[in-house]
Image 1 (cartoon, rainbow, N blue to C red):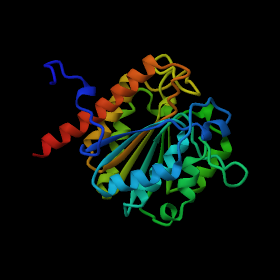
Image 2 (tube, rainbow, N blue to C red):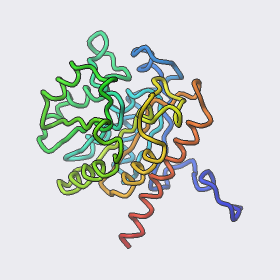
Image 3 (tube, rainbow, N blue to C red):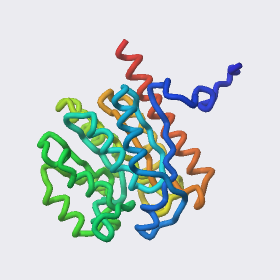
Image 4 (spheres, rainbow, N blue to C red):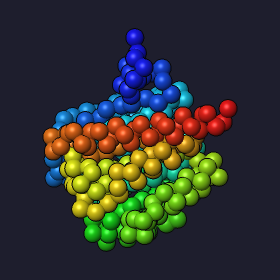
Amino acid sequence: MISDDIRLGDIITEDDNGDIILIGFPYDEGVRRNNGRIFEKEAHQQLEERVTHLIRNQKIPFIVGGGNDQSYPNASGLLNNSKSVYVINIDAHLDVRPLKEGNKAHSGSPFRQLIEDERFHQNPSNRFIEFASQGSQCSIEHVNYLRSKSPLTNIIWYQTIRDDPLTPFQSIIKSAEEQNCDIFVSFDIDSIISASCPGVSAPASVGLSAQQACDLAFIAGQSFHVKLMDMSEYNPLVEEYRTGKLITLIFYHFILGRAKAIRDSQ
């Protein structure tokens, strides 16, 4: 029996009956290849198949990892179901590094894999937006790579939005909605200042506040065009309690946003 003090854990069930499906992906191989800290292994192919199946059945996958290399399988699952997509990478880093040894994915490569995917770059309606990127964390070669792919790609620097990241984020969501594109929000939590989010492989001296992170998730949840969201780089071996609670709070705000959207549409 559920008490009158309902907790988030009370309403989560271990099945696919909900509208939002929470998936844990504690995968480490891509982090190891990118010289980061290691947790444990899962399979990219299984993740892509799972995400593809859920989206096809009108579910919203919300994936928590693990290395950021999870984001290409997640994006691929959306591409398997959608005609046109907007992919928003909330991240201090660009994550468009080349593959290792020619064909090995890692935590720095997911969005290069996305951009080079024919399903993505051959559709002129698709867009990839880097959001809250920090210049001190980004190679000029990778910046130039993204610029060479314009207008398919765009970079929104943290320095330009640090006082108000919500308004430009809302504008991106609105643009995708107007173009009738499905949206994937990929949230690398090392974009959050490490004072609030220490449990990551590459902690940030400056970055988004915890409240801003929650507000971004709420905005994402409000849009019916957001079909998929992931959170990357959580490393509980570095720090578990504060970071775990923040991730839960971000997930909670995404749920709140979707609940409000459903209520307002009725």
